[in-house]
Image (cartoon, rainbow, N blue to C red; front, side, top):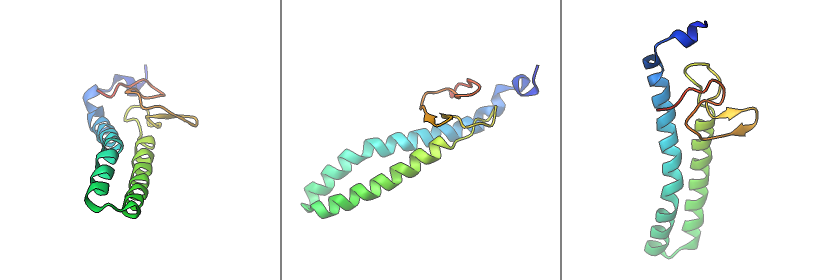
Length: 101
């Protein structure tokens, strides 16, 4: 039996907490766009400012997804959400099956 499988699951909690924080940040970026853009348009009546807001949001969203995709599994050390070139945001490691709960 491998030593990594005999380790206590509590040792993984700090790594899983980082993944959970990154996942919440990514979802927050997705959910905040529509209210922020509507509020910007209502307050300023400027499509130019709304375009700038979209560009800033898009850059932040790309950063958030890249951070989430590059998260390492605390058990196996591989990428938690990526396998080969595909990305999946399920709550399990794509390599060892460690659940993020």
